[in-house]
Length: 355
Ligand code: MG
Figure 1 (spheres, protein in one colour):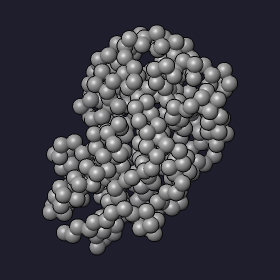
Figure 2 (cartoon, rainbow, N blue to C red):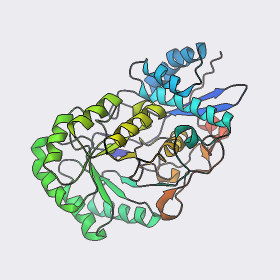
Figure 3 (cartoon, rainbow, N blue to C red):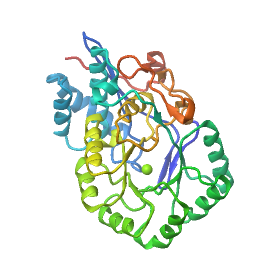
Figure 4 (cartoon, rainbow, N blue to C red):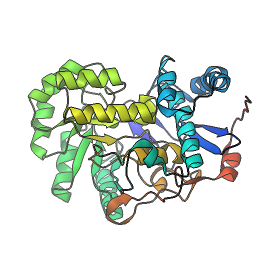
């Protein structure tokens, strides 16, 4: 990575991912499972996901291959947890399905060919001046909104500095679950800065407390860490814990589970956006296809490949077009092609299973 991905409770400096290639007589499909190393971000790690895929998920799939996509999603649901592994396998089957049908992936998912607006996310910076420089850089690159990470003790003064220098730009903050209701005075202050939303202020399981906080603020709350399953999203909707949802394909366990979350939110009048871990090119590209669904109304966190990575494994790389949006390249499947030479070059492990 060009710089470490840093949030309030940890950081990572290189990106591991498990790529799943399904190779059939009819065609091939690629998927990506992209948990973070360590356990600061999720319970799943590259090690645990690799073992689950090779020992259980892939052998089970090869025994009874399922190419009907809605049945596949139901089948994946029968495995407990392991959302990253499920997203990786489902992504590969969806890509295969789209390639064989000669259709773009968005068409399989019920999306459209529209461009997807992209927003830049900025981690915790050592100084306010560093943060300001970063905001300037991303605005000049065309990103459609700026998100800054906050943590207790590093919040109001960061927002104030950005507002003073950059005026009324589309701005939001992400707390990564690092506050409690005892910090209400911080949120009251943040509430004065016309933020688009405050993302995940409280703990993941604090769904009722988020509802309490939302009642006391004008600024919409966006749930991210809390929105980790269809059941959790139903609870969030029922309690009115937030007015926006961040949906992440890897966390939801695949494209179809994410689509179901999107549809539930849409029925409840809650707009969404497509979040990211961030992933490598395969999962990013598949997320972009899903992000063309109509209730993904806020800019996505999926950024240009060069934002995070010295190199990426797809061709072309993901880039920002005019007006800070990402235009899918067209053609069947993802539109982007997996660069197999690069995959071989960066590969740490390889295993082949046969039906
Ligand atoms: Mg977040």
